[in-house]
Length: 285
Image 1: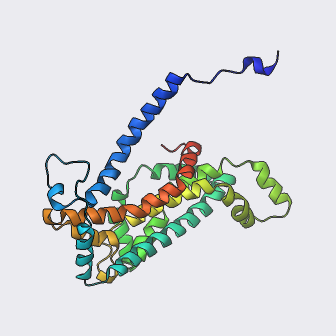
Image 2: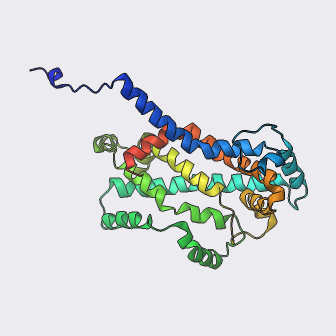
């Protein structure tokens, strides 16, 4: 018998397609609701922000919240552009460094068998059980011993050693066919060449996903007890000071929250296909 005789019929009925679409639509609206509400609230006048029960739509949209935020920025000791530069520099440097270090460490762990590599893989998986809040105290002690408190390195250096990026890159690199790498070795390519010209282009979805996670974590990091100098503070730190002004600054706080949301959302939209592919390949939930 031909193989087509046993081909399963995977087509759904029209009713099934409609139900799946409605199910996904409900979940999509549910998850998009907080983002849309934050955008709408940023353009609400004060009387609509304070109304109860809160309304999802804005009746009289205004830019007064953004104007108020701009006026507050003019009164800062340090220009707002300095806070923006600090956030962009720390996020970009930390993301690039984490991407390079995690991929360079993941390549030998996933493609080479050396003494202790299985134990190191288990250590990487075990480290995923610890949240970042657990490491705050030892992180401060290490930064203090290295005399890096109140410097850019206090935020960049801890971001370089995140085990999540190493886990993603390690699992994704492990799916590459060994024949492809062996063919490159036979042609005389060294390990550095194989890593940079063969492995990295083939794991592009993984490092794009890692770029999103790393950038989002650094962009939202306010510095906490690691940054004291005003000229070194980042945008989330000054935004938290604005939002601490109470209910009188509710509109300005909404505008600040919207501004902080824009960069991570844009990066995610541009790389969302790679995120989905990485999740299905690496097994990360």
